[in-house]
Image (cartoon, rainbow over all chains, first blue to last red; front, side):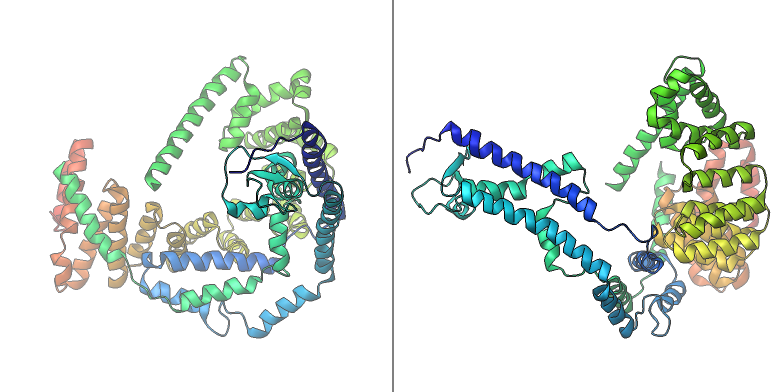
Length: 251
Length: 310
């Protein structure tokens, strides 16, 4: 077991606390900057097509999950209404699906918004990381008050290449990363749930390209309905009702 | 699990309603808690216009109390205006709306109140025009769509109401309140096939609500025909199952369906004869009447005998 290290209180006062405070302030600042940069919505009302598609999906899902409660004839009529190849509500022609995607990619406002979002995320992160790297690299900043396994070394001792140091010691660079991803809860308290500083979420979104294609959910719902078999539950209900009435008469 | 959640919700609602009545009495007798009462009435969506108007006006007329509310006073103005229209105190409503439109020029919410005032005055054309203007700005304003339907119904123009409802449901297909309204409107016009479709939609969206099952069964029973009657009987049975046999209407429904099926098939339908459901329903029905309305029990007994069910 490695010997305990004695950490200078100056590290706490001049590294640990300032780093956390700076990270919080940068997060708040970034929130307001991104709010200013966000382009105002061109129309206050949502796209009618999207609203309608969303409602169709809900209605089709209701049909799929509760089909056993309506007669076979009613189910068949609805199934045709949703899935027929000519004008079914869930049927999306191939060219339409491609058009929708092309429109998303060619929309300059959307591209601009994406760039602004990425800019508001990358620039401050690059600067703060450079600042941390320059001033606070290569030393231990804190100790976690419980033991950890070796797997945590890479996460907690970034920038320290000593295998003899106990895993529960945190390097200053790792403290920066812990703050970067761990202040999410604090930001949601300070700035409200819908804050623009959730880095982990943003990083995930960056890989996802231009958002989700609404026509995909229609297609998925159509496929689910196509393969569905109707099994009416009401005949069984008569027997259940008999049991209920027998129970009532016994009382 | 679902039953437990429902029980908790029911208990909470009952508790809130009791608190509302307590606060109402307190506020009426000048014991304070006026603002709490108004907030709770808003949260519970309780329609108690006379009380809200009295308590709300008292608050609005008290300058210090009103200024103490800060930005909340505008919500109070809105609440009092709505209550005033409900009580036909159109002068009060007009004053409140005037204050709001001065404070929030061009607000859709205030425009909605102004249109509502036209409705209260029975100036239907003006109200319709006002709502149409709001919908031009925001075609997804559900409240405004519903107000237009209400105007059509208030004028007794049911076919127009149906048109508006269908238009609304093209946009908001998942709104079960609208489906229910449409179903009831179709029933009032004796358009049973269309009403049946609407009740099917309601059953699909909320299959555990017995009200929809029984309404659908009644529509099918009214339409008549062997297939419809057999289906209606099944839905009456499902209502019995969902209500634990406590729904008298469903018990009657089973008896009536069985009687009608027997008349149509003239004893050819062996499966129906073999079913025990109608006998049990008749027995439970008779027991219920003996317990809760003994004077009517002989009447029910003879009715069931005439149906050859008892």
